[in-house]
Length: 304
Image 1 (cartoon, rainbow, N blue to C red):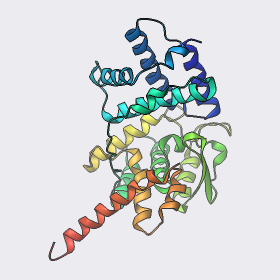
Image 2: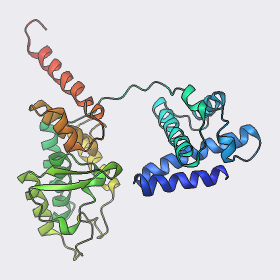
Image 3: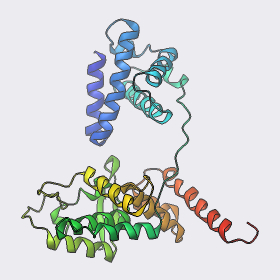
Image 4: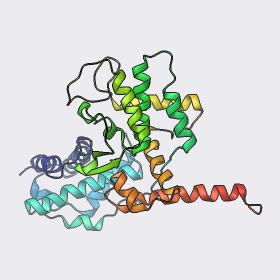
């Protein structure tokens, strides 16, 4: 079997068995193809399944060095993700094709210091949603749409892709919303009255006739609303309000978590609401909340 054939089988495994998102499959494919191309260039011959079992730690490190120093050098985080993709590829070869590669255990990726989440404050979140409803240059249904999207992101802690996956048949929203997130994981998200009200107002003003399975949020000409439009909206709003470039749509999801944590919610509950596979991912928000408490202490304590 050739290396390309083994990679094709791995990508089918990712998409059909592990139910990885298309973007994840694309990222893994890009890293694995770069790895196979490097091996072919380095060894001067076509890469076969047998070749992949004899990869040395030096070759893996040389591939990482090339990715770091190439025309488009990668950061430590991107290098770590690329190495993770290759490890997953070799794990598949070991378990499914009986072709282990011992060298993988001898190579460590670069150290990556996780960036803390960058939420917006409660007042800033309210201001962003209020500003989304103020735009004299657009139709009322578009401003109602923008208000509904941002309210949904903050009120339910959704990713952009999750918010834009809502269908016409999902309205009117109930007390909770079933969301399918990363890795095909399904969770229930409580729906606040303010979220239902914003969605209902947009739905009532929507000027298009659509089928139950069509996307709920529509662009100006009637097509599905693309994620880039929501990102551009936040870029415009943060410019009006003088906020930093960290005020992105995903920052509203971060705010959902930190505001719950600040109000006393436990990490396990927040993990379930966000759809995180690991509690360690959710624990990042404790550092953010601790920073907020220390800032308040420094500003208020007479001895600070």
